[in-house]
Image (cartoon, rainbow, N blue to C red; front, side, top):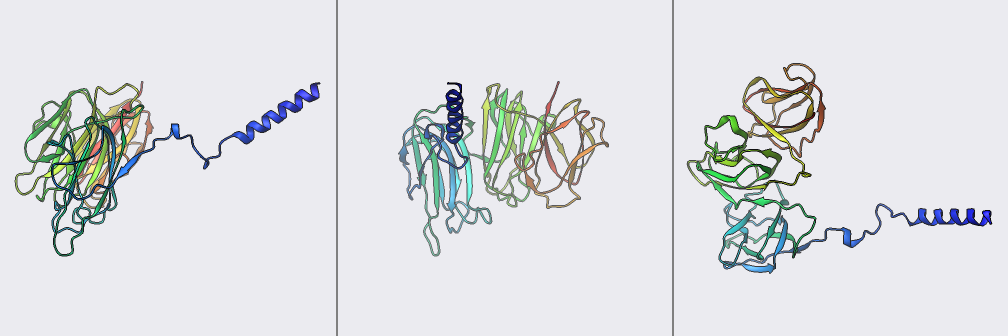
Length: 346
C-alpha cells in the first residue's frame, strides 16, 4: 500500500512538473492587456468618431508624411465634435527628421469618445503619412491613469497646470519653436514666475535646434505644477504635461533637485538615500566641457558615483537607483541644465 501511495505521489509530482507553463508558451488572455488600433484616414473638422469612451494608450507615427511644412499634416484627438483639441501630434518628415517611427504614450481616459481629425496636405511630392492610434474601449480596471494638460503653445506666459501635491509624470515636446534660444522652465509652485529660481525643478530646450521627445520625471511637487516659456518671436513650441494630483501611495515617486551651469559644490541630500539618475536638456553637444559629477558625500568631493555629459537624456536613459550612505552632492561645468532625482531613506 505504501509503495502504491509513494508511486502515486511521484506520478502527481511528475504531472505537476510537466504542467508548468513555458516562458514562450500561450498566456491567459484574461491576464493580458489587449489593445485595439485604428489608422485614421484624412479628414477635416468636425472629427470622426472611431470608438466610444476609451483609454488612449499611444499614437504611433509609423510613416511620416512628405510635407512642405512642419505643421502641414497633424493628428488631433478632440474632446467632442465641437472641441476642445485634447491631443495633437505632428506627422511631417520635417518634424521627425531622423526620429521615426515615433511612439507617443498618453495613458489618459477619453470619457466621451475617441474623436479624431487627421489633416492632409496637397502638393508636388507630398504624401499623407500614417499614424496608428492604440486604445482600449469602455470602462478601465487596474490601469495607471494620468491626467494631462491640453497641448500648450509655449510663449512667455505662465501656465498653471494644477495645485499640489502633484506627481509630475512627464513633459512631451510635440512641436519645436522657431526661436533659437527658446526654453521651458518647470516649477514646484502655484503659480510660478520666471524669477522663482528657488522652486525651479527643470529647464527644457524647446528651440528650433531641440528634439521631439518625451521627458520622463516621476517627481513629487508639494506646492503645485506651473510652466513658463521664453519665446517672444516666431512660432511657439507645443508641449503637453502629464501628471497625477494626489497620487495613490503605492505609486513610485522621487524628489527633484535642479542645478544650472557651473556648480562648484551643491548639496542635494544629507544622509542615507537613493540616487535616481539625471535629466538634461540644454541642447549642448556631447562634450566633457559640459558635465555633471555626482558624489556619495553630502559635503562633496569624495566617493564619486557617476559623471554625465550630453545633449538630451532623461531618467529612463539613466536609471541608476544607487544607494548612498553619506548623502548626495554634485559639481558641474559648462551650461548644462540638470535635474537630479533622489529619495530619502530613514
